[in-house]
Length: 363
Image (cartoon, rainbow, N blue to C red):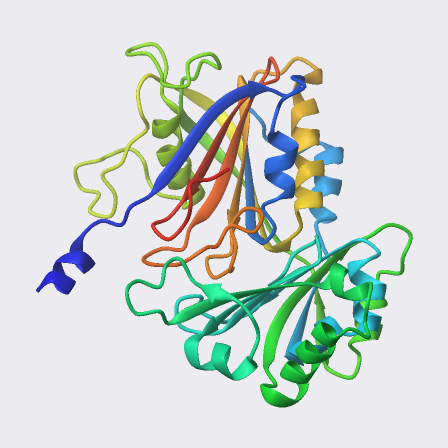
């Protein structure tokens, strides 16, 4: 009965909201974007906009490519050739595909060269590697986390530590996964990753882009200086985030009495905009691409606009072993880890960061 009660309980969520200005020396916006590594969906909403500018269209079209490699042996990610070609020369990202973080073995490569393994108890013991119990294991430890610093290993490929890891991945406990891979670099050939993994089943992909114009959209009234909102004057950051969720899901938000799907409506006070542009990008999207997109949205108000604000929302992969930086990420009931920028026309911004039950507080 106790287990049944816990399953019926609403899962705990953590939401951090803060406000700042893009011109402030201590603004954290770049760091927060750069350290949220594994992103699968990026959406932005621009009120009073029917068509995107040429600059924004070009950036949206340039959010790829990324690669899907089927049945890639894990030891391929620790070879001298891979480390020298991709890890040391740019930012390389990898994430296992179609693996459930709370049930399966999962792997992620971070741009700092850390290889993170989330392993079940049997696999962990078979590898013989050093790690630590997952902080979300509960009383009975069933998951372990192993972190391997590829940059550190690359300085001494003849060390006993490197030999032991190679032996573990090649002979003692060989593992294969389907991987998503992406590489941010300057001056190298786009096809380098295709060539490197040519003996495996590798496919190049571009993120999927969906654009739509929303007519007569009821939008919350916001004041950049009032994060908590003011009664009858402006809406709060929390009310806004709920509303964004409805808009991004294409939910009907008029709270009509015959609507049995959703009784949610736009928070008050609100205003109706004639049209708003919604763009959603889905794939394996790098922080570097998101940083450039955020910067371009900041320049949206360089010329006078009717819109008082624009927003950029980013969602991470639910089954990534990390959320921000190397913070362990779990699934529990939702696996969410996301952030949202509200960019005002005076260069102020709100930053909202949310995670689920099996996560530390966002940074």
